[in-house]
Image (cartoon, rainbow, N blue to C red; front, top):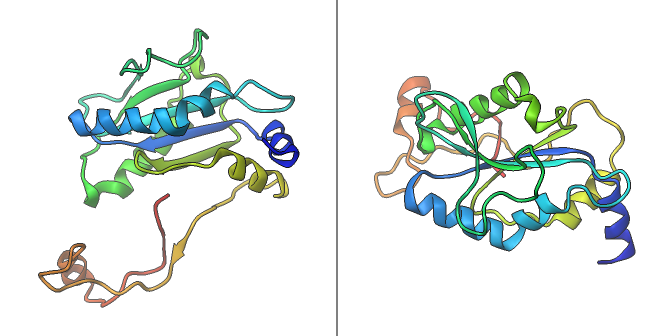
Length: 195
């Protein structure tokens, strides 16, 4: 680890990480791969270095009858760390699963973190980072980027799409005839893309 990366890791604030995941065997496999490639090391390194904040990672799943948080005990030896509070868990949400429901999934997860967060997770994090189970997060780069930013109350880091054209042909993968039927526009309004 370079001195700059080490310094930025020491200054990384507390972060709540939401990882959107799938239900079933495919989701369990993806969660295992995410943990093996970067997530376990990221969560486990949360207490190292002066000024590094607490790190919580929650895999958000949809379709539950009631919202609840359970420790993650899938493969890789169970939950990370030996602390009483879970640092790696499954957040079960009551919203419907599926690509067309991503906005509701995001809103449910953020609402839970901001309003229903149990005291066992510790104080609210300074930052919330949302990603998907098939994304690789380069923690050193994130720390370096965050350490260069001024103290802000709100921040969006990501890609913003401006007037993306609708896909309406039957052969197109992300065809969205419902949006066209509802609003009669040939493009979407500006929106923030996923992780």
